View 1 (cartoon, rainbow, N blue to C red):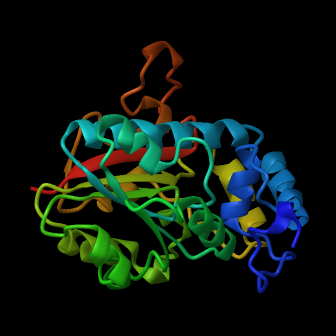
View 2 (cartoon, helix red, strand yellow):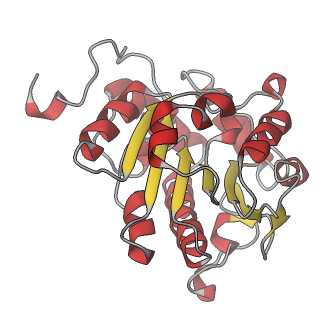
Length: 268
């Protein structure tokens, strides 16, 4: 393999676009294929603000991790972590405490392979190839058990991933199982596509993503709020990503304009 493709698993079909690689493309990353870029351009045609939406989502992740770190969380599980880019969870968390530990989880082979390369010399961060619909597989994985103390609070991050759970997957029930696996004092951070603000554009985006390995299912604000059942929502509740505790109020957009709602909950 060349230096440029040493991260590429041999069994990956480059002609099937994936959400992780499209997201990487929208963020300006280099770990994507021609098929991902073609579909990424169709995504941009359907939602011209898509690059801004992706950056806002990434910025929410940073603020959420810092908020949890300041609340005393020192171990994180990042479901649907995607392809590593600037500002990974372990880098953010260690701004608060250098000993913070992170378990990354994704089912996309390129995301897993590249993350494993990045983390190979890091004793406090690991990568799992697992499905977001399998909480028991994530929490019961030997790597999770080895790295984390699951008797102590955990920061569970599900940023930009639950919209890949179809209605028949019953995401509310999936989240109940995650909640039961979390010890008291844990936190949950979620961001999720919505069609509340621009339904026509989101219908077009959903149609585009049906051509990928990862169709999306936008949900309403009440449906996204329901995913936090059993958690106490932190202020300001479920809002557009840019409105969740913005670092600079002047940069916050109107509610939901980012096309993604976000929130953080606390398990008593």
